Amino acid sequence: CTFQGKEVPCVVANTDNGSITSELLASFLEHMDRLELFPRTDPNVKPFLLLDGHGSRLELPFLKYINTEAHQWVVCIGVPYGTSYWQVGDSPEQNGCYKMALT
Image (cartoon, rainbow, N blue to C red; front, side, top):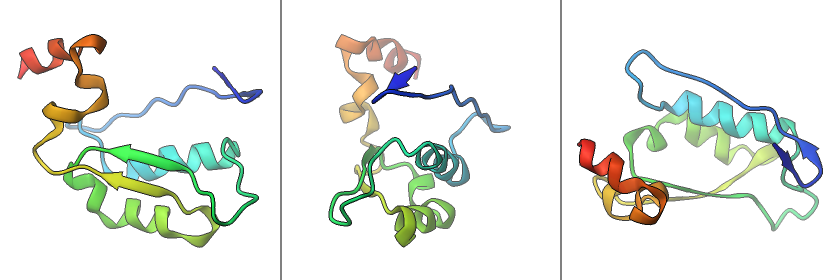
């Protein structure tokens, strides 16, 4: 896709158990940072990321990445075990009801 005039290649990754990991999250953000998708000219303005409360969001690889001064991110982590109530992609308007029906 194209974002702010930059070509952004698709990123595909997987794990043995199909779950996202702290390392994967950090690598996705690193990919976006390498492409310089978000301006870093003002030290008071940082990219924002909204995540559910899965445990991988609280592991060191991800936390180290988002807190490294060269590429800090502002991250809001939702409450654990509340994903089906507020996760962006789970709304019925976005076909999230299909995902919830599977569980």
